[in-house]
Image 1 (cartoon, rainbow, N blue to C red):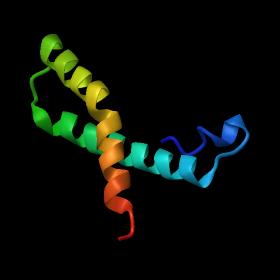
Image 2: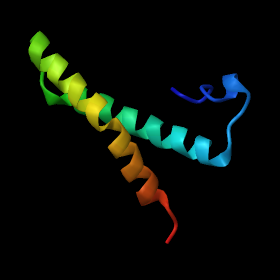
Image 3: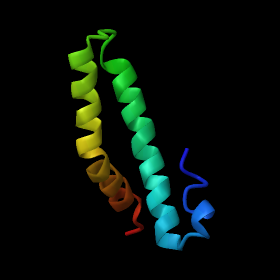
Image 4: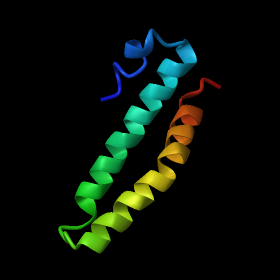
Length: 71
């Protein structure tokens, strides 16, 4: 999804590539969670779910990067 994001801006460092991979993973998890959360298409429910994702996507990407570190 975000593979070409930094490439179009002239390249990416290793840290930036790792961050994009973590964000990609976080977005995939968010998509799965939103799709499975409910068949209810009430606009308030959808907005709440999307706001929840928007407010937590950075923390999820941080957690994915932390978990991926070799110990």
